[in-house]
Image (tube, rainbow, N blue to C red; front, side, top):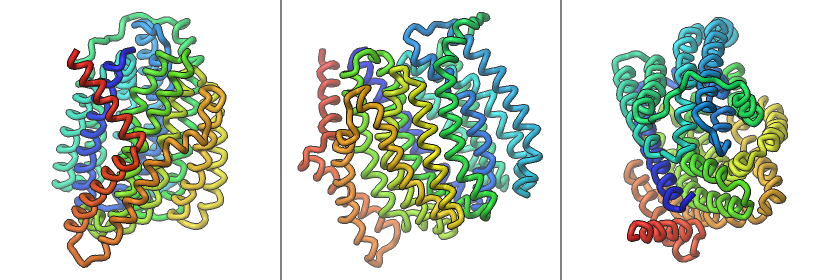
Amino acid sequence: MNKKKVLSGVMWRFGERIMAQLVSLIVSIVLARFLLPEDYGSVALVMVFINIANVFIASGLGNSLIQKKDADNVDFSSVFYINIIMSMLIYMVLFFSATYIARFYSMPILCPVLRVLAIRIPISAVNSVQQAYVSKHMMFRLFFWSTLIGTVISGVVGIVAAYTGYGIWALVIQDLMNVCIDTIVLWFTVKWRPDFTYSWKRAKGLISYGWKILVSGLIDTGYNELRNLIIGKLYKSSDLAYYNQGDKYPKLIVVNVNAAISGVLFPVISNIQDNSKKVKNMTRSAIMVSSFVIWPLLIGIGVIAEPLVRLVLTEKWIECVPFMRVFCFTYGLWPIHVANLQAIKAIGRSDLYLKLEVIKKAVGIAALIISVKHGPFVIACSFIVTDILSTIINAFPNRKLLNYKYSEQLKDLLPAFLLSIFMGIVIYPISFFDIPDFLCIVIQILCGGIVYLAGSVFTKQPGLNFIISILKDSKKDNAI
């Protein structure tokens, strides 16, 4: 796979994620101003069950199609029919379980919301195979357009619904519209169509790899959503809303940046999986570049969190600020998580991937048991401890597989982290001046950007140097 194709994939994936992030951010800000924290808390509870159910469709077999070097239309068609059948069964389970879930949480609104929102599961069954095909063939330009169109149209519809008084249903409408439009756009732009063929032998081979990724995904998603279930049951729905809103914005940045990198990294490494030296170099590059981009954004959000929330979400959401600052630090460790796991998954070690998930979640559940009695904020803080331990666990196998030690990985991540901390220290005192929130944020962002970029050049940040070298290579390729 040539460098130009990889670069093109990264750029289109970055473009798609940045546009999705920008539009989603605007939509979520507008909706938060119209809707109550309790509305967000109710939808957050419903999304716990939707996200867990969606793992059965989005994980496992889709990854198997990407990882398999010679996957053809028989493989894709077989997975398509398996997904359709599985999604219908899952929808029925959610439909009939909705009454009991609403009763357990003493929130009647959860029943109709869950039954309607669960319609996204069968739609995702189609979309997951489309996305696997696009990733397999490095056609990331199609992701850009489908995501952009879906996010914009669904965002506009959701805002109109919230403005006209639909309340919680505005969030439901927006989410369903998004996945529907994304799937429809890909259906008309991707040439792949399922054949009337099915091979149990092929499916069996894909399942033998994919079931471990599926179980890993279930463990990961179930574990992440467990906090929402517990907070929703033991505390007020508004507490869950503040927890989720504080989590949303740091996560929005990290997930989008890492999705851009890992979305390209997985198929690329799958194609060079037999060359451990090249896999190590790709993994190192992913950690350096994602750290260079993610850390200044997270530290910056942590610094400006309070005036930012007052300005864009209004005073009613101010209680989410402490959560936001905790999650800013927690998500900064994701570059190590993602790069290591993508490498392990791409070289075919789904068994090892599963073992790591079991170990990490055992540690996380222990931390959750200890913290749950002390309130939602302490629960959020427990993430810091578990994420630090998880980076060590994720990195451990690659010490042998890729000869890439944890100490080396920290050296690749620390330069961006330390420079970002310095930037944060420089711009934080600006908030003590008696100036309007908007002006304060603008000054902090401008000063932070100047400090970080100047510091990057002065200290010769490896992430910046790597990006510059890629851009230079791209110019050479275009000139040729």
